[in-house]
Structures are given as structure tokens and as C-alpha cells.
Length: 163
Image 1 (cartoon, rainbow, N blue to C red):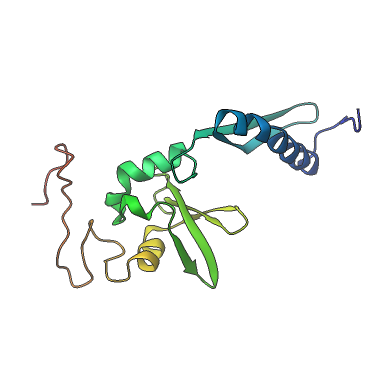
Image 2: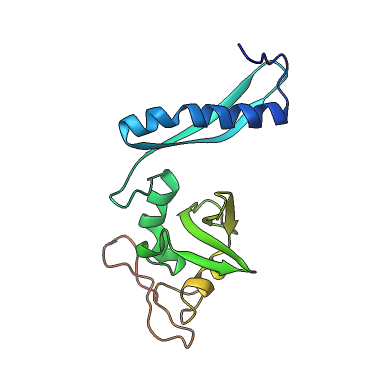
């Protein structure tokens, strides 16, 4: 045993999370999945760590609950399913769209920077960056001049058209 943890602190938990994620990479490769450590809770004597395990797509990207939610609901945010995984620049930094959390009304779009650090963005910022010709707060496909777009998704019969 190289090191024994006697008390959990934030720095200790961060080191342990990184070591666990690294150790699980062999399992991930064996089963063709992506394993990523998530948030955790700790007190002095224990540490609970969340793991996210997702299948891989043909392009090598991993599936997650948030990426699935993006594919289902992105049109409500004037985005397209193909925008998942796209890169954009904001304030001189590069970000990649990774998912959607519709319960976050102010910052529903999830992105990662080049280091893999996650961020939440408002709809308007991402739409402006990816589709400058579209209304950042409008319905799917609605252009800045108000033309195009509709709230009704033909594949969803439960959403009524606007009156």
C-alpha cells in the first residue's frame, strides 16, 4: 500500500477520483465504453463518487444522459441534432457542445473546453456562435428577420402550433 488516506478532504478526493478514473480505463477499453468520474460528496470518513458510463458511437464519441437529451430536445433551443459535438468560439476560447440539461432554464446547453472541463451556457450564446443567421431565442429555424421557423415539430404530435 503506497499511501493510506485517514481523512477525506477536497484535495484528497480530487486525487482519488483521478486515480479511480485512470484505473477504470482498462475496463472501459475491454468493454468498449467510456467511463468518467463525476461529482462526489465527502465527509471526514467517507467519500461517495458518481460514475458515468456510456456506450460509444461509430465516431468514438460517448453517449450520456445529457447527449441523449440534446438529441431529443435541441430543436426547442433553435439547435439541430448535428450540433452535438460541434466546436465554437466564445471570448477567445474553444468549446464543444456535449449535451443539454433542460431543467437548467438559464444555462441549459452543456459544453466542454479543450481540457475537458465542463461548462453551462445560455441558449442564445450557443445559437449565435453556431448559427449566426438564426434568432438566438426563437423557434427552430426562425431567422433573425422573423421568417421561417415554427414551434411545431412534425415528429411530435403533442406540441400544438402557435395561435
